[in-house]
Image (cartoon, rainbow, N blue to C red; front, top):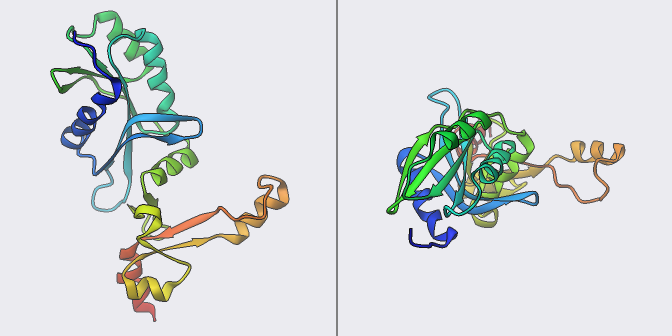
Length: 217
């Protein structure tokens, strides 16, 4: 098999997430201080009555790493995501032992061949650690609305938001960001937060501002 750079496979996997998993948002090399994800996708799964989304992370390998090691790395992303996959660039299909290992660990498998992704084994569904999942989605510029519970685009450097100014949010047809000072103070008092800065940010989406809150005035 021709040698490839691992990063050159990311667009192939990203395209697969958009086309076959119907992800409305994808990203490459995103993550938190604990680790970075090769490719991530986010899709709507809430139906008509919920804004629930599903987060999918794919660990991409170029076919030369020990399989069990790569599988364990993919599994670790369940702290962030609802589904985790190992995508391996290879000519030969996964062996029975490799599929058994992946099934036992609880990860999905994707074969990358000739520029195409083929899902061989589906990932189970996981409940990630909420704060890590929300931070990861924020890293993709997605925020959770405090009113409708839906995720929406925050814009680059929060450009789609008005900062604690409801009037501007209404006039400019933007979402709103505000900081919860009571929660921040409570964390400071018990020693969770050891700085005077306030990080407890909350979001309200543009639709809730325009079609609900603006009518209250």
